[in-house]
Image 1 (tube, one colour):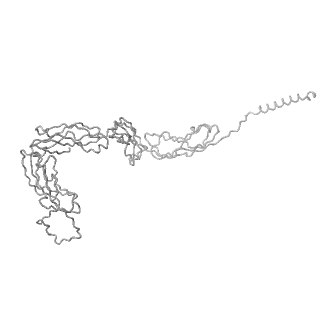
Image 2 (cartoon, one colour):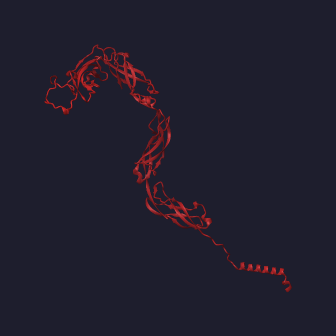
Image 3 (tube, helix red, strand yellow):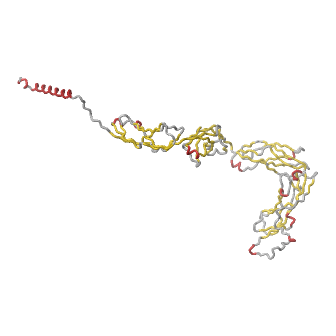
Length: 465
């Protein structure tokens, strides 16, 4: 046997057997497996948005949610911590929380296997206010300018002109208007059914962010028309009435006309002249004329294109008006004027017109003037200009009367001391330097013209309607 044990291969086999037995003995005797050591890591997560739940936004408005995010510190295995950022959540439960200011806890949520170490903040103060709804009118404004030659009309709401506005009770008194804006820049035609968003503004013109408008938009029509201008008709007349008749009135069936064209051309026009021929008089108290209206040069169109003119004619009467004051115009401040003939301060005129119009005529209706423009000190012969009311004419169409006026330099008051304040001024004691402001009682003579020349014969006058 010693010989057998002394062999090298046998010894190796015996050693292997003993090693296997020892290994089996160790694992069979131990009932608890050996686990590896677990490594826990920590992590800080910033800017986690606070989620509001249970809040009735139709009845209330939420203020003072500041800050609106939190910071979490968590720990866990690396594989758990590296999960999606959206798995970390913070909720604020406002269910059954009414108006007022209160401090409430925040509720965190973390992924499985992750432990929350801390959260900042963990409580938050909130203010809740009740809402209130009122009805407000809608205002539509425009911005910009239409294309050249076009004119903007007033915007028209095609639907309801009032909307409901809901605001926190504390802001309700600040609302000023609900307004929509339409951009009309370079438009060449009208806008139909445009949807316009509405905005609420406070008394300072600032947008009210918390305003809820129902409906939030309206439909609007915006008229864009060719540029136009309304001008009156200026009715002139030519020709002559038969002897013994006078013009007593002119009327038209339209007060004015609309002219369409460029602004520069429209600005130069103040009225539209039309002419009727009195020679077409047919022997009645009224004669109707149809006049074609043509657009003036530089104007694109006119509306209407015709007008009906009614001319009233009556038998002629005459009347002499006395004591008509002569007014001096445009006298230099360094001069004073004196009538050389006191009688020139008043004149008498014989005028023609209908019996009714002459009966209402007074001296205050007739303006007699002498223009002293550009005259220097000395004696001057100045013509009298006469202005009469409509449908009143002078019996003498070629009236030509002048007065003698003396102009003198005004003396310096500091260098002149009068010896006698009651001294007479000359010309029999009468002072003719200033015409009276109130006329004396009229001396009037009425006569019926049975065949004299009418005031319209051979003359042309005009009347603006």
